[in-house]
Amino acid sequence: MLLKLASRILRTADTRCLAKFAWNFGVKGALSVERFKRRAQRGEYFPAFLYISLINSCNLRCQGCWVDVESPRESIDLEALNRLISEARAHGNTFFGILGGEPFMHPDLMTLLGAHPDCYFQVFTNGQFITEEIAEGMRRFGNVTPLVSIEGREIVSDERRGRKDVFGKTMRGLQNCLHAGVLTGVATSVCQSNIDDLLTEAWIRELIDFGAHYVWFHTYRPVGPKMNQELALTPAQLVRVRRFIVEMRVKMPIGIVDAYYDHEGRALCPMSTGISHHISPKGAIEPCPIIQFAAESIHDERGIFRTMRDSEFLRDFRTLSAQATRGCVVMERPDLVKDLVRKHGAKDTTIRQTAIAELEAMTPRFSQWLPGEEIPEQSWLYWLAKKFWFSDFGAYQGAGHDVAARSRVLKTSLDPARPVADNAARENPVLT
Image (cartoon, rainbow, N blue to C red):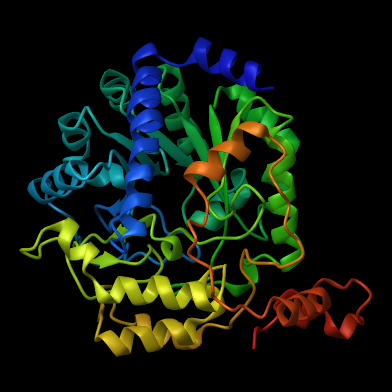
């Protein structure tokens, strides 16, 4: 299957795009992780990968979005972005995830991509601003892969994303990328309204026929001012997503990304391991995109490396979240997040200034950590890649998790023999 995947990519992706991916992301990315691991052994944490939300504005209004898309525009200016990337690169980082809002609404995005030919960028986008000219520009640069978000087919996409003809416009952007020979992926936030349509072999085959090179299935997290608990997956569905990904990796000639499991199928959180942190549209340094609090900024005079390395706020988040869970601390322990924010006097980085109230309104629920339901990688390539370059890096050693007690709660929530009256509890198991 790997040979079929390689053959298909070689036939459909531009040579320059492939070379930049192999060198900037592959070789340099692996070296970046090795430098991260050596720093971590010394107790010095600076992430191997940075995710940067350069703008809060977006043309869509997605259900459950935590970004201030309806507020006045906030964005990081080009000078600050160039400084951020250049300093991170000086410490071995070459891969940057670019988020929004909608990144292509930032007036300087293409200038930024072209200014750093020795880096690699993954742009999370709804695809609707990707014209033929934009796609051709990305092909010329070669150092960028658009990850186009598709949240359902025609009807579900309009409902999930708050606009009309979302699916059609997004598919046109995707098509422009593929026609230009740009290495392109499709992302889906798997939730109750799209799991049966898009978490299927038929959908993957459709994407392969369309020409997509990789897919990323991540699970919906009910956070933000308009969190929709009804869209969240049950523990059984979380296991279903993991099993599907593992099985499709050895069956279908398309790359399949996930960010929450190691080679043995054990859950992890990139924020807790320290391999990744997030920059907000204001320049705030946040633990991850859905934890919208910060004690430091990229504008601090110390520079991004020293600021992140010396941050007690980030250090506490990594340590205490790893002690609490191998999953998502926001989903499972919003109370812990609130305590850490107050302990460090961290600022609410949202424009709406309601992030604490949103934490207090959350119902704790299971995330990706489901003890006893681990599904190891079946593909030798993914197994090796994760073992050496995307593991938990020892973050959970000595955490003292009560796995037995947690497993008992989980088994109860997964038990199909429970009375119908208990269905609501099984769908939304509360962690205590």
